[in-house]
Every structure is written in structure tokens, then in C-alpha cells.
Length: 309
Image (tube, rainbow, N blue to C red; front, side, top):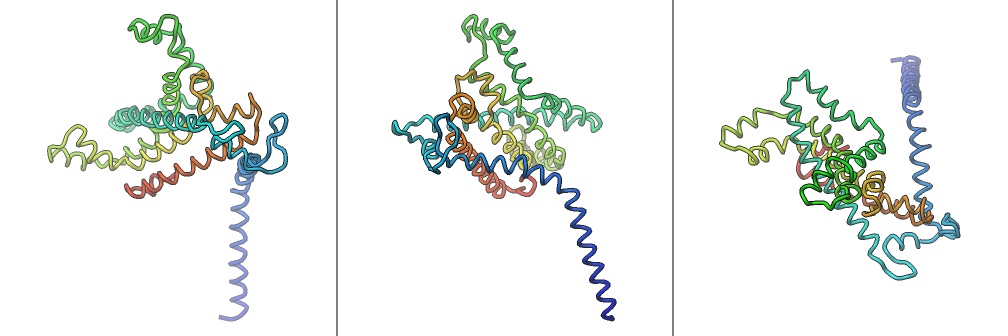
């Protein structure tokens, strides 16, 4: 091979690499710039505010300090308080409860859809996803009407003697739990359906041939095959529910403060931006720890590649 031929081939290879790089930046560049401008930079600014001193009107001021992080841990000029731990525990319990309830509702729904004719499955799945296309605030206000003192549900509970007259299921912890479960149910159904659609029914039939039935059949043949979708659904439900603001604020009626509402109050009601930013840092750390725990769990249980988001 002559030097001229090698030079031409090298130039062609460099031109091809340059062309691929240009096409990559043209196609992915705008999206990347959007993410950096409207997600990465605002998040970085917010996290940085968590290390400033709270000014006279609650805004961030110099000097830099760790006092907002100490307040998150419960330490203030009045001593230590367990209030933040209580809010954290309540948020975690509500989020995990929403995860458990969505799983209990999602499995029957998913297997009802999977056992229908193939042509009907997309339409049935659309019916599950369709409500989530409506704004979450609108859907939450609808539940406020459905659970209010004059609603049919409240009258039914009152007639059973489980609720005092002229009181409704809203506001309260039950209403908040219903709202969280309803809002995040599609996020459990979709990944679980994706896993159930690939179900090997021959294993289920083999389990029946071995005289397994009911819960034992489900646990040994169905559950392992749907585990990747289940883990993905738990991530999509529990993590957002943990920091939800709209549902606890509207349906909880201020009776059950969750971490999302606590953060919002530091920016809107009783301004203390550094403290609110420090709470955000804490929530992000907790969220990342939860994702890491799910990843480790999924690797140990199998199907890690399919279950990771």
C-alpha cells in the first residue's frame, strides 16, 4: 500500500468520524442543552443555596455555613427537635404504602389485560394510562370532590357509623393515601405489563402439573418472571411519592406534613431558602440511596439489566 493511499484512507476515516460527531451534536445537542439549562443548572444553584446563611427576609446571604444542614438534622438555637425525622418517617411510610397498594391493584389489572385478545390489550392499557394525561392538580381536585363531606362515598361511610355526620373522608391521611395510589398506579401497571407480556406460560402449566395452585403457583412461577417489571414499578412509584407535594397539600389538608410540603413551605410560606435547599439536598441523597438499594436488590434477585431505569 502506497503512502498516498494510506493518507487518503486516513483522511476519509477522519472525515467519517467528524461527520458522525457533527450528526451526534446536531441530533442530541439541543436536548442536552435543554437538560443542562433547565435541569442541571437550576439544581446546582438550588443545592448551592443550601450552604448560605438565611438573610433577614429568608433569602440566601453570605457567609457560607453548614447551619441549614444542622437544621435539617434537627439542631437549632432551641436545641434538638425530632420534627424533621417525623416528617421523613411519615413521608417514607406514605410512599411505601402507596407502593404496596399499587402493587396489589396492578397485578390483577395487568393479568386481566394480558389474558385478553392481543388486539384488545393496547386499548385496555390506554384506559389505564389515559387519566395520567390530565394534570395532577385537576385529578387531585376531582378526588377532593369525591371524598368531600357531601359526596356519596362519605355518606356511605357515615351510614356505616365509621364517620361522624357532616364530616368527609377529605381531608385526612386516608384521602392522601387514596390520591397517591391513584396518581401513581399507571406507573406500576406499565412496567409490570411489559414484564407479564413476556410471561412463559409453559412454566405456569408445569407448576400446575406439579399440583401447585393459588399463592404457591404465583410465587414460584409468575412472580420471578415479573420481578424486573415490579422493581421498575416500585422505583417509579415510591421515589416520586416520597417527595410529592400536590397530593399531600390538597388531600392531606395540612394534617400530615410530608417532606415535599415542608420544602415548599420554606420557599413560600415562612421563607428560609437555605433551609429549604438543605432539605432538598437531604431528599436527593435519600432518593439516590434508595435507587442504589434497589439496584443492589435487583442484582441479587436477578433481572438487574431489565429492571434498571
